[in-house]
Image 1: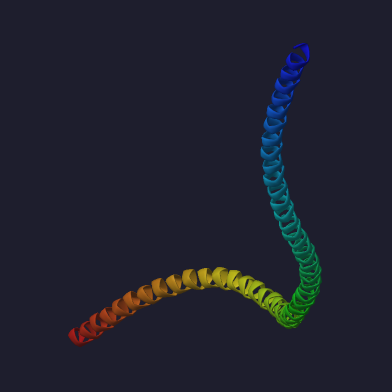
Image 2 (image 1 turned 180 degrees about the vertical axis):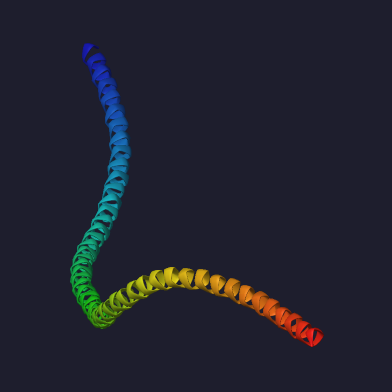
Length: 188
């Protein structure tokens, strides 16, 4: 009996191990499914990562091209800026020279006119001095004329007085002559 018992025990142990193996088999099958699912997910992630990396690589390449284009545009802009600056300076210098030339011509004309006016003014000053000299002469003559005129006025008054006196005397003489004549007629 002991053997049969042992055999039962072994049979139970085998059943228990068999159950465990079956349970482990199921767990392994389940684990295998999970590994398969994880492998699929990892593969999917790997594919997505590859696509994402490819997209990033494309974007990096595009950024590099854009950077190079930007560098070229900046270089072209600096070149254009330099050319415009040179042209602007040249144009402004030409305009300034032309304007300066015009102003210099006007200034030359003004200087010539000023010199002409200066000569005319010198002539006028000389004539004015001559006139002033003549006026001084006339003033001297006028002083002489005034004193002579005063003398003449006084002399004229004296002559007028003398004429009145003469007239008065002539009237008296005439009166006396008439009286004498009357007396002579009466004395005859």
